[in-house]
Amino acid sequence: MLNEPIPFDPAHDLDALAASGALGGNVALYRQPRGPDLLRRAAPLEDWCALRMRHGVWPYARLLSGPPGPLATVEGDGLAAAQGINFASQDYLSLAAHPRVLDAAMRVLAECGPHSAGSAILLGNSRYSAALEQELATLLRCQHAVLFPTGWGAAFGAVTSLVHSADHVLIDTLAHASLRQGAAAATRNVAAFRHLDCDHLRELLAGIRAVDANGAILVVTEGLFSMDADSPDLPLMQYLCREYGATLLVDVAHDLGAMGPGGAGVIGAQGMLGKIDIVMGAFSKTFASNGGFVACNERSVRRQLQLFAGPHMFSNALSPVQAATVLECLRIVTAPEGEQLRADLMRNAVELRALLQEEGLRCLGEASPIVPLLLGSEAATRIAGMLLAREQVFVNPMEFPGVPLGAARLRLQLMARHTPAQIRRAATLLGTAARRALAAPRPLLRRGAAA
Ligand SMILES: Cc1ncc(COP(=O)(O)O)c(C=O)c1O
Image: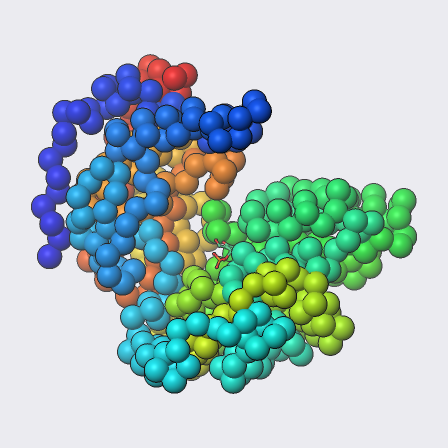
């Protein structure tokens, strides 16, 4: 049973909200505060966040009670804990609540205790992590897989351990921060190609090779982009990399397990299993655990990752419980049950996108576990997110730095176990909230934005 919607509080009336200034500003304005006092110079950022919090439009760092299921109990935005329909968690195949996954985690907790004994290069490995590396490599048809304590660490570690200052990185302009920050830390020779644009990529590759025959070039993209729900042409990208002597890295954090035949993600769906130079991913979206991996075919690349990727070498390894959790998820993902869960997830995605279109709303990308609803204006996105939270529909309103300025959106992440009734109810409420937010009188939005 859902709780009763919280009546709209006059204190949150839209005019009052705009007048408060809580709809204006953005994180970019506060990113690099100036002045010698490192401890106090960020005070204006804190004031701005506090203002948004007071007015219920700071939908971040909320508290979740219990598991991250399709119905979840969430507290935040100045609202008391309430149970609602949850599109703000990452558990695409609903494996975090799967009895076999819970059982595996409990068994290994009892057997090995709660933590890993050290970095993977020391005594942090276990028979569960060894089996996981082996089974991941098999799924991806790669020779090797190297584990990392987080997906972030896998991305950052892969780029920084393989690329050095004389090399080049060409990266999709919308690639995840972990990849972009890895590129920036590895070399100054970083260029972004337009999102999914292989002609632009070819132009940049040719430009580099015209002046530098010796530097290595790493080309970086994602299987399924986490804010836009779209995918690159991987066969063409890998072909271009071969043509120009470059190496392709694909981050499959959001699609591996949740999409593609046998759970092989977009790489599998595009017939590229075993043909991509380097594949990296995260366990946090489909495999019910923190953690990540990098898969490759060369033994020497594996060694380079093990010895020079900081998050692998200098951070405690995945715990045995985490490794066993992911391993059990992987076994479900690759079994017929995984196929059924992916079919349920995709049914939800197709249904929600169709219903939102009927509501007159624009979803970005293709049917996938991610449904991004582009609103554009940060103010409208804040209003819509607040209205939805009051109706106990939890979504993630995305603003800069998650997405570019002026491209704010509501991001919904679906699960296999969302029910058709939850999808229908959410679509209606999303339609109402987005229309109301977008129709807020222009001066209201402008006034807020100028504050
Ligand atoms: C595309 C992509 N790569 C890497 C990561 C990092 O993974 P994790 O959060 O599991 O560390 C994320 C997570 O947001 C992601 O979306």
